[in-house]
Image 1 (spheres, rainbow, N blue to C red):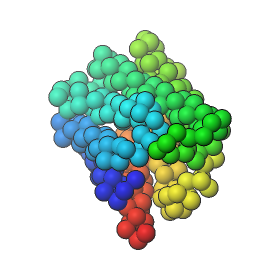
Image 2: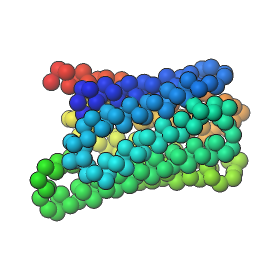
Image 3: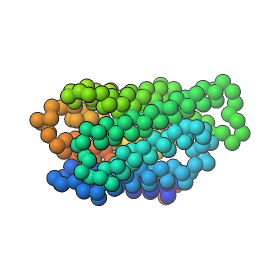
Image 4: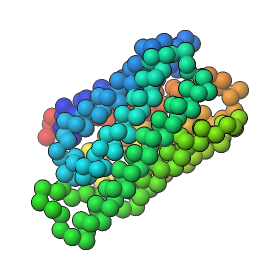
Length: 254
């Protein structure tokens, strides 16, 4: 990603972090925090669109579009709460939100499977003219794709009526665990492309986001308003924002 793209992505993650922080620290819910979380993914999507030619040349158009829709789905979920903050906690709104997140994860999984197929074709045949090769190895890509698919199922499971928080969040915990393992398996390759500091921050962001789902699965009497888990997810977005700032600084020095 270019310096401009990295800066926009950092700003997007920072907006999400600010929105999450407001939600986790203040007892009342207003449109501001939800609007920030809706705008963050838009900036991240714009960051991808700036380098669309290179991304499409590497991943393929199909994967690029699915990744883009997956990112925007997160913003769509929060935009509904920005329009009606009082709907937070409503069963129908919660199901709608997790369904939207499920669609986002499903798009990410499909995009990864398409990239895996593209990587396989590149190994079998020479890349086409203008097609960039995919450096990632198969094992981490499969782990990431399956993890996203499991998370998608975890989002859709909220459509079922159950009082068990563990049942609701177990698939999201498993899915994000696979994503974290995928990142750890790719750490050396990521460090070569992003630099070691950015790689560490990215892994910390993924681990923190996994941890917030673990906290969500705990009995509600431990954290009735889920504020502790929101503190942790906010930290995850801060780590991601700093990672992209470091990437932008690295581009400046290059």
